[in-house]
Image 1 (cartoon, rainbow, N blue to C red):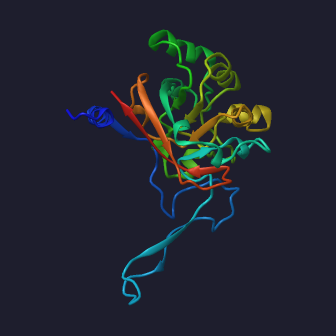
Image 2 (image 1 turned 120 degrees about the vertical axis):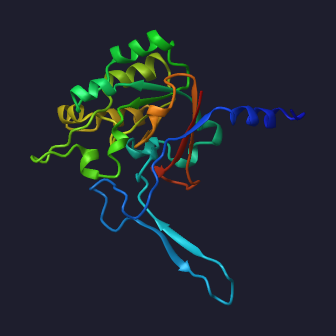
Image 3 (image 1 turned 90 degrees about the vertical axis):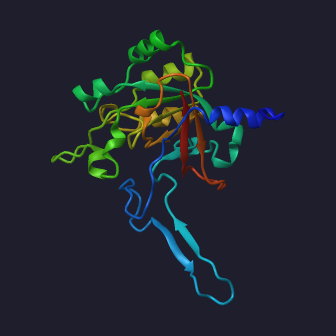
Length: 252
């Protein structure tokens, strides 16, 4: 043990399990169909080996803000609300709560988590802590990177996937004062909720409350339901409505 508390804390943290919660990205990775084709161009070489001026390799990267595992800022859906530059490093680490609805999704792929589901979690693990990141586990991440599978696309063109209900989000934010939410699916709203309202009402609610969310998470099945910590990192680009994120959990 050293005389430095943070170095000791880091060594202790390394004894826990660190879990990658973000998808790896390449030029074939899926993104929302409303984004124009050609919006992704990763790792394009603009300075190659063999130049006498400087022997090195430089690349450029083009991608939508909402690409792969990504964080959404309030201004994405709430006009005039905060964008990426508003958030500091201390705003991006949270107690992690994982609500598991995988059995419900096996019965109904359009299932929307309920307040009762969350209260059942709290009966087992205790109340959602203040400032928590509440993640919805559906195991939907296993469909990555097939965009049709992620969309639950059927022959009639309909999309079918699970997600949040408005009532569940109101509970975690108004009753429990969570700071952020996340999920493994493309959108916040379950397909059934989105269809019923003709809008992504759940996503709109989250961002209008000036909360944060992360979409297209993975590996929530490898994290303890309670007691873990989640860290969200992204490029420090100003004026962004959303950005691809590197997200990980430290769990027992």
